Length: 324
Image: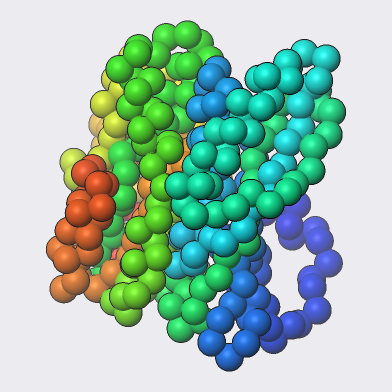
């Protein structure tokens, strides 16, 4: 649907200073401000994925900041986007949501300098984020090369887990795992930007692993082969998927890219669903030279991304993802 909406818009006039627009579905827009630096701009917001208002604010802020990290940028300023049904949600609850966002931004060294709020039918919260990046260190979701290793920074399964929160079936341990994953900043993206052997980078969010990897493959003109056994999954997310929990967005993601995906015969439905599960504040996905993959993986582990793993590699040929 998003592709159809964008395709119907008039094409913008050429602007040599706009280094990254919406042509490849990249994580943020990037605009040159001088010979060496560029401005990064992004926005992200959504309705509650957990019941606790403070946690909701933290998750939404982490998710919005991730887009800047995914292009190798450093976020420097945020504006809050807040829509609340003021006849249904108390002032104290709204304050807790905003406080959660401010707390994450403070941890990231980013001031929340303002924003905008309106009265809405459903709660909505997120951020517009501005960042800076050195032009020669920009990372995009295109540029992957045949032979590149693929590294995933966090485990999958947050879509199933947030759905279980709404159904009241997520355990306390599962909730703790969900919060730990969705409030872990992808700030390692700034360090990864320093490496020339990283050819493409994106964060895995609403389109799921296969949806975002498909964008990388399509934009880079490469295929990909994934080792199913190497893909990290959050324990509670895996358990929920195996029990039959699913999300409507996983089905929509599958419909969007299934023609460019080859799955092994007999793949269990739960595993199929996991590969399309929409992630909130999800992992970075990195395509890098194979020779540097172990060192880059060690960087993830050293910064606390314990689940990070090499999950496959890019291949020459059509932009098809083969899972084995």
